[in-house]
Length: 106
Image: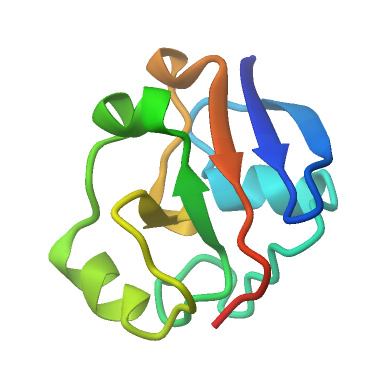
């Protein structure tokens, strides 16, 4: 299992274990992480699973695809570290990943 820590907008740290092959968004939903809405269920057609990838993990996670960049236009307070969690696949390399949940979703 891959460990992922979600830091909520209020600063609460929620440590989870994720199945490889799942997405960070699916992990958030299964663990009832506040602030991850995921209205489209992971189809990359909304911006309600927006997260900020912790700086220490940005290179490992990588950047968004062109389709994801288009959807991030609908997110609030987009930063260089912004990603849609539905587009981040869980794998062994992400063990220990930390993502921050914004104060509101798109």
